[in-house]
Image 1 (spheres, one colour):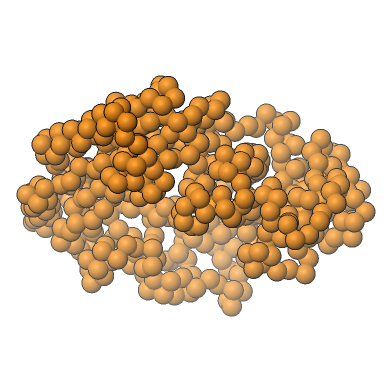
Image 2: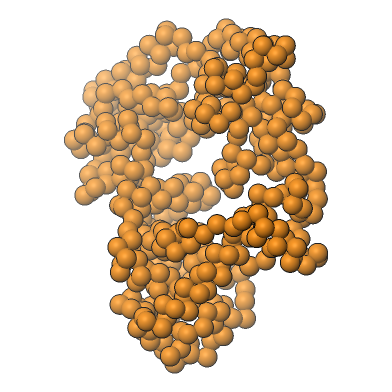
Length: 447
């Protein structure tokens, strides 16, 4: 099945990292002009080398990359005409997300710097322009196809037209609903946490190293080994409470104690650079006492009993008792962060949850069990198995939503094809002789 064209893969955000071309000398030149946007030979070659480094091969790779660039520049050119923009905050947020991903994959900021032979600040600057272009192209594509929808009859027609041997094979999937209780943190524990942070602050003021204390005591696994250093970040990269405190500091100053969903922090500002700051922090997370954990479990037991004797529906219990803000408003239904769907494959469920629900029948509710939320906090929850499908070939009954998405993708893809065919006729495009023999997907690039 054709998919809507993806302009640049996530892993190609390193487009401007010059070290990927160390073993070859690229004589640069402009190989295409689209509107007032140019494409350099080095951009094509660097992406080709990046693909090869990741194991991708294709007989037509250089031409495919070149057309991706043509398509992207056409979208960016049209975005400028239509005043389609992205904010600096959006770029900062995406930059922070991708940097966090790269660092988590490679192990540390130091390893990332060593790999690219650049500082974190330089890597971010290289990525910023690429990410901004990606976000603009995504938004422009949404502007073009955003109003498109598929009717049930179009979905059925699309499905019937698929060759039987091309129907996707769907792994076993489940849908889950939950009721979450956050065990109460005792006031004595919060006071103890704050007292320790005040002690750390006093020790730094008396000459101790903030960085050393962060290594020894901070409970942020992502920054503790780096002395609490978070690197250069914009406001959009930080939770609101943390950003408000950090951006009001002078260089070298240590903040008051800051509470966020992650715990309690003290922050030291290291450097300000325009709209960016570099800071380090020490995070301490309050611990739940065994008594409070037992109380949370007992409360969920009582809630489950109310549901089982039909005093309360599961949905009503969610609305009345659940303390998870992400699922409380939609009946406790969990959504898969990787797909945006409510369905999870078995491999996508954390082992602790799967162990509890694996033998449940549809509609049954688990026993209360301990888990960890997205912020690393201890919680107790009940899970109700909403649906479960066995491995199978896609069909309209069990997989209507998925097939609907495929049909919409196909319709969007066809609409984009038509849009490009029209735009290339009215947009100035000049292509270097070296690429004029490419077998392009879209027609009309060569005039």
